[in-house]
Image (cartoon, rainbow, N blue to C red; front, side, top):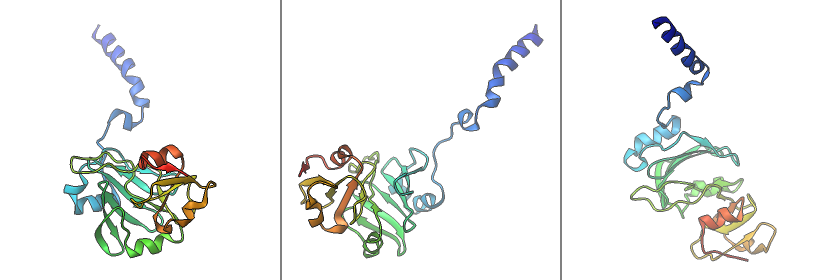
Length: 195
């Protein structure tokens, strides 16, 4: 009888041998590489990871949501940043620096000219001291990098399609932010009017 019970248990456990280890042992998400280095510098600001690092298919940047904001690694110029929705802490060529999300450092402006700049914050779950963040998909670029565009300037009330009115060409090039869909843009900038 005991042998038969043991055989039944073996039969029931056999499928577990063919499951990937990640299915059997759910690990808590963690920071790795550059995200870990930045999190170690400002742990009280970064909080804890909510998910494993993800890649943005539009530009290869790495993203990881945290309990207080979003970690971003920018492939184009190899800088790592954390944003809480209103401020960013960037580990770039000048070491660790902080700025408002509506601002850019001189070295960021120079880097943005040849290609698109992913704008932190992206999708982030705000913590108690964070303000809401922008949805995933916003790419800051002087040149078209999506189908819908507006300006990050708080004075801008309008948005347009890439092929629609060329009013976007009048906006400061470094302030143009592009989205794949009109819905993404309106999620990031509710209340803007289409032109």
